Image (tube, rainbow over all chains, first blue to last red; front, side, top):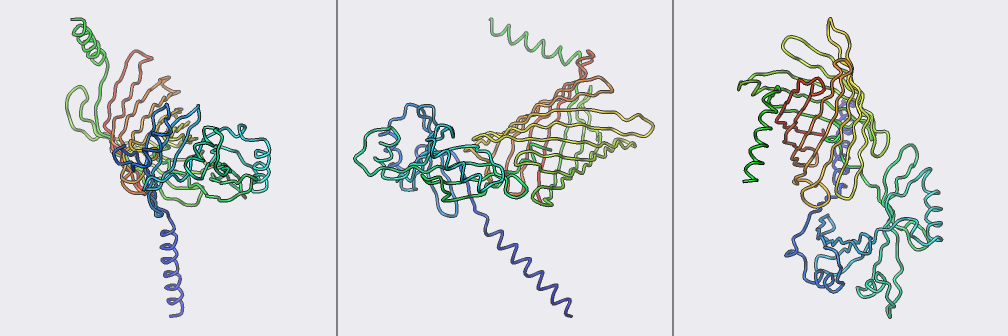
Length: 195
Length: 218
């Protein structure tokens, strides 16, 4: 009788535990967006900024809601402009080489990473500009600005070794090279490329 | 005039190419079941059958069944070693095969590029063990956005080179597939598997298979 009780207790814990982990999984979907479905305000911003290269639009859906993303190449850098669903600009991310960052920032980030991981390799670096639209514009196009200075942050994809194994992380650093946010990137399933 | 001449020449050459060589067409349905054991290991089982529809003439005959079991060990974020065993049931005979794979997959913004290096050993009663080595490059590209999400289609292209040490033969495979990610746990791929072999020995064999693969993770 006792054994039966214990078994059912574990079974229930297991089942609830399973449900719990399952509910933690964030639903995310990303797809190309036709320009007709892009919020007017976002289009106006892009038109005003007058990029020379073609702009591609994407939508990203998650439990937190939906965001719109414009991707474009500008001065040999990949830019990603993220908008709210109503077309308000959230931020801009500019892909650069790690060696393009200021030397003191490079040093600080490397110092933080060597404390955080046994071994690491930087895979992708994006400078993030967040703020009022015209201030972001001035910052991006290196124009003199009347606005409050935008302090960039750095979103970096790192392949890092914790204890035993390597994993990929998306880490947001502030201007001092300190970690503000860390996200473990779940590796995608490649069964169909292996078997 | 010029155009029709080109079309005619291409058609004629194309036909004569198949005319002088052996050509087969058939079906290759496959089911792949994978079970995660730990964060670094998984167990992959598959069953594949082969039916011939055309071989010199139209027919429908069952050719063989392959049953495989593979232990997969992830050694890095994008690299793995696979160790496997295949049982091939052909008519009344059974061919045993062991193999070792080394895989690595590179992900770019919207493309996944996979490489597979393989070494295979074939064992058969009353026959000497034979060996084969192979390399495959595959590319996967979503048809919507930069990532394959649930209920989205993708294209998968593969190119493989197989070298049989025993027969001293090189085989080349081209595999264009259309894939569909049905749920988070399963995807289906439909497409062709074109195999060109024995061209080194001037006895070119062409095989065209229609493939349907169902990948399920449990």
